[in-house]
Image (cartoon, rainbow over all chains, first blue to last red; front, side, top):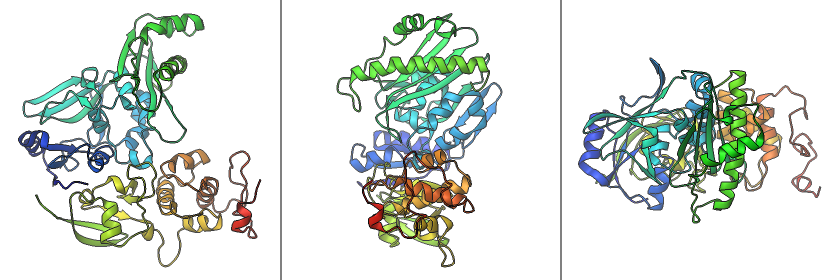
Length: 289
Length: 186
């Protein structure tokens, strides 16, 4: 690994100060499960690594604040996957967090780090998209909230400005009944990166929110109002016909890793139909959402 | 650029004051500076789990943790699992069930098993499989490893009562089983 300077600021202001002053020479370190691999293979060569784990202002807890669940930037995947409030109200996020890497990875990797890494295959991204998450970012210009749909710009590129850090991720608590699920396709059982990763929610008002990743440069969100996809009594033909336009935005690259574009598109349809089935059942059962 | 950072870290119950290079991983410092070579260097991308150690009670891939990040932390390596000269229940079960073949992955397997049983003392077979999914065994000795963890979690269960994968055979409960017998053709 190429040598670098290590900083472990105790305050958000100090961290932002270093990141702003050093610009592209600096990089933030949270769980490190992606960054340390990139440092070792030389694809990232910072002069200074800014460890954000000692910053008290970066929440280390999951809390309810009025009408939203707030996940701090230091919360790791394993704690999200096991949290009873996440499991009750944001089951697709719990399911997604539970399949990120192995236990060893989930004990280090943070949700904030996962979205800042902006991998098209990030498993938590589709869940955050269907739940309409907001990313709270703090930087030299103050605090701003970024819709998760505006946060992912392209492979490895997120909407953070220089010097900005994600401090929290806000999830609006469900305002109506819903059933949701996360599913994915990997090359093998056991831990692997996703060839297709997908989450969907069927809402009590008859609308559907569907999100998928690893089939294009960034994870995508599509929605449909009053759709037969929410109707448990509709025919398989009707579901397929209604689903088709929702998947039109998928554009897997021919150079993409792990699976061919044809395979990904075929599996995207299969996974979407299965996930909608599970989400409708969960909505009917009134169980996890 | 600063070449070395002072850190205080407890390793296997012993407080250590070290000076570490910021780009050295916890794995490198454990092996090269402290001589604790039980944790193995293998894939270096967090897939194989051969470098697994416990950091503040959680199993992590020490190849993906900078040593400076462990400052103030409590590290347990496979060398720290036994206490008072006695193997842990999991270590003994690995022996009893013939869970070690070439042995390279076993330190990581044992640390992950210790972490699993610390939080989930009576896991199902599926939970053991998931708990150890980050520890690859190139000998493919998974069946014996899983049996050993299940037996360690429930030592009073009669031999042979642990859940098994369909078609799997147990060798660990047979005292006459030899290494050769274990690889005998089906």
